[in-house]
Length: 448
Image (cartoon, rainbow, N blue to C red; front, top):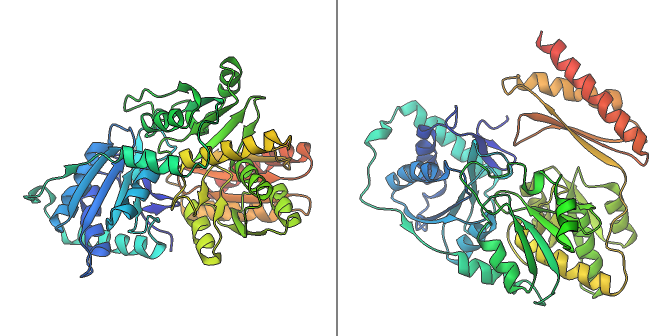
């Protein structure tokens, strides 16, 4: 059964629109308290963080009403990147960490990501348990306006501890190169510049002036159109482009080439091998480029594909005791560094290992097979079965030996993602358009 509220990465949608109303978040707080914080050894200690959306403080207050009703102690770290909440939840023995964010989505959307006491995102079973309680509470028609508590939310500052944590993951400070940071007007707008300045980089900082509505707006890791020119004009070696909640990155080099998650992992692994550092296995996703998989196979490094979603990648990493994994979209997971995707730490590691490769005149660029991802926007009210039929029929029709094809409904946006990969670029481009048109026409036919 598909979940009603949780998607690929937490709960996400337009704030104020069903189901994500103000009352929903109060019910969510009660549900979290009853489902995840009910054991006898639980201290019911919860920490919040958020990105820069104007709805964040409202959501924190609404969820807190429900949590306080369940007797929780609540701390609020305010605007910090998602990985800072994962880090601090584990470090200070919180029972849960809750990040209020809609990641790379625009400001009207918002939601939450939940971390357990070990700094990992909660399990699918935990999500199901919360959803069951949400429905149970809704059926009881509790008067939410009457909920009051003598306890208050305590504001705390975790930024300095997180900054030091990030710097401790870098073996060598003072790399002395020029760097552009695109901070997406998001949660890293204060913290990231401090980390990279302390690490010795000369910085050109852009999109660091959030106003509550400009997060990810023509900036950040989902909008790279202007970055090649900015890198060139600023004489930067690289541009590091983060998403709004700071758990993933894409990188632009001085030649204007976009380096995605596959490229970033490739560089880190190639650098590790030069330094004789062990890489026992890597987890990617169904979207990972075959060229990266072939490289790992040639180096006798185990490779496993997971379903899209950093939680799915993490699950496979833990099952196989692998320390490295990631998504093409820019989530980089390094379990020897952090329990979650972390844009700052991933960037520092990439810059460290790319510097080593450059000094040895070794190319850090992965020569990938042509791959194209097309997003087909769909009506959010389209029945799930209609979307599933259209995807299945397109997959059956266009699957070929010389084409790698992944078609799926996005877990974070109202669209169908079509990934086409082949050794021939013309085949990739023509097939992408043909498949998109086929699905679009099929959806119209099925809906009429």
